[in-house]
Length: 62
Image (cartoon, rainbow, N blue to C red; front, side, top):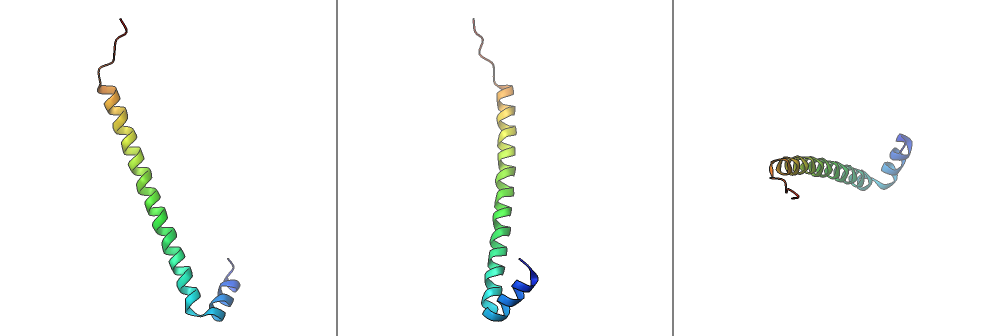
């Protein structure tokens, strides 16, 4: 979004437009933080699964 359009919306709509943009920005930050945590948890779970599989006794096909 260009600065001119942003200023035009802000002058026409007042502080409500600024509030909406701020809330959308904060929502985006929250989504990114949640994604980062979920990705980190997935990596940890994958590593734990790998470690457990490596330490379990393997079934022998006699």
